Image: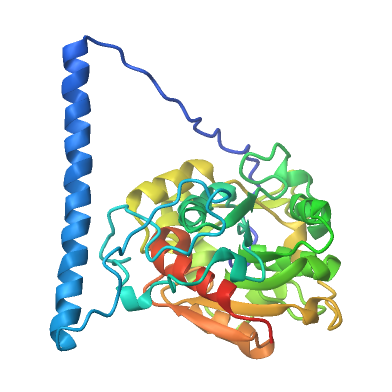
Length: 378
């Protein structure tokens, strides 16, 4: 999350209470339950029939455009429930049967992953997802489901004081402390085991820190609308760029002075009234609601920390950047400025994506992540 600082009145806040997952079993007579079961089954069948009809329509259109020649397999949707047991299976052409909005349309067959490619052909099939400031592992729920359905192994971490990690955000004093759950995880990997790191927002600084510590355990790094620092730079340095105006960010910031008004801020919270416009301007309402009850303050000290990065460690890892074109938190001009200062191997564009593409463009983001995983070693 981009940061443009202006001191405000002292605020002391406690992390929001999180909603817990509750499920209630409702009992009833046998007849009523049977009717409900038939109703649910009917809805499932209708949804399946609609998917099959759509696939057939696409096939017919392709045939008409190409003289009746079939360009793709009729089975345009496959679902794997267990990624471990299906490790040797081909990657599916489509990894979700959820209803798709106009902002994240159904991918056409020629856009989907090559069906003949197997998980075993990849350098690594393990993604590690690192959230941005204020977020938690919860924000990746759509990406986790899509990747696992496609046969990948996925780990989403809660950084210190984030998500359900039980630590006071105001007590975090360094980037090392903030990123410790990530570095602890990498340390546990077996010798020779590698992962693909994906960082969003301030998570870009966190994966950069981890890349410098464990270069042999990271095969690729993907920055999704993220802070991609150069050596000796802090996140604050990036967001203090006077050429990039972000009034919305300034309006949204609420500084927390847990150590006293005469001391530096300990954390930054976001004004809930402008949350949608800042982070979720193209995201579904249900995801905005989830974020509004799940986001926590952002620790201040890690944002100030200048990060030393070496060519022999951090620089040895292949980097990729995913731009979000409708981003109000890290505007596209700022993303391109970071890319120009520290060019990655390739840049991908998510058209119509806000700052939270895992909500606003989950299918398109998934396609890019899988495509990057398939890029062979040079």
